[in-house]
Length: 71
Image (cartoon, rainbow, N blue to C red):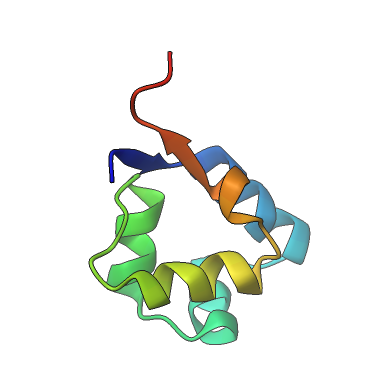
């Protein structure tokens, strides 16, 4: 998969929920290291953690990723 995380969309979802990093971790069930990777634009190895984040923030997968080949 050649895709990147749409970081601005993740941050927007966190703001909309009124959650900072710590609150997002608690509310979606991921650790700080995983969320930090996502906020750095990396898709984590454990995709279930990524899905927990976007599901908890109510972000569709189509909006959570940017196709690496698209310009």
